[in-house]
Image 1 (cartoon, helix red, strand yellow):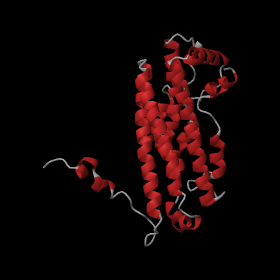
Image 2 (cartoon, helix red, strand yellow):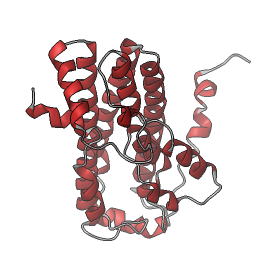
Image 3 (cartoon, one colour):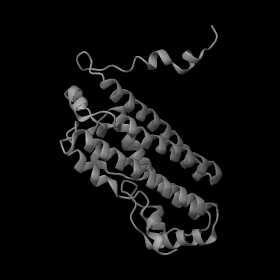
Image 4 (cartoon, rainbow, N blue to C red):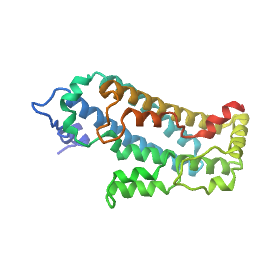
Length: 260
């Protein structure tokens, strides 16, 4: 039997994955499910691209790394645009099926945690939300001890002749990066040289800004849907999300703006 579009993409199986739990069911629950499933698919692609990005950086293959990052930037724009769709869900419509979610919440998205860990935003405390011994927990624990995208970047520029302090090349990988004057001095040199690395730095700023933009739109979507209520998964809801908003992924790349 020849391969078909439906078979190749497993469309029949895919379309069976939307299973509303509300009575009747509520009309808007389908939108809620599909939107979040699509987010998870895009998260999977982002992880795929970021893994290849790091691999390319480790091989000093900047053109391929930048191509990966450019794709991630376009995906982030799609994620932001999707907020326009989910925001057609009114507070009343969401309340009609929200109880069916029980303790499930986007806060529990393991793939988004993977993205954060890969990018360098690391906090071992989030592991408590995933049962010990389960595949998700094991995967996150492994990522917690692997070099982040920022670490791969530092090793790459060091290999390119920009001397990164040994303390930064061997830093505690379980912690997010902190401001470092010596690293900033090397970054300033990169910008002064106007090399391909300069373009890479700007792409990383775009990535940081793009993720912050998505976080902001996500916060406003949650705020207009549930206000300041406690999040479905027991988090503090909007208050928690605001705390995550303005913390940069790559603080040194932002800090040098005053030195250029």
